[in-house]
Length: 117
Image (cartoon, rainbow, N blue to C red; front, side, top):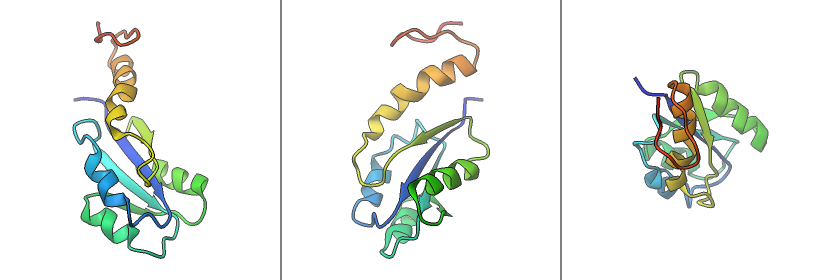
């Protein structure tokens, strides 16, 4: 079984972008998408749920939302944080998590090389 990865997206009024952000996530790179909402007054939560994310109510504050998402990701070994406004490139998730997953599985990684045990 591979290393479980959770993507945590803290949000506050990101209705215009959240569905597209979730749709761009390479689902082979993450096991779960958690949207930690800080009290949005728009359709952020509904659109995130429709896009397939698990919702967590976080309360106000970016740090609080990050913490709530991390706590909700109880089964994950790797946590990835990404903004809900589309500023981050979801295509980079695999490049960031592959070396961590490799080391966690007992392999050695160097730079962009393939894992070797």
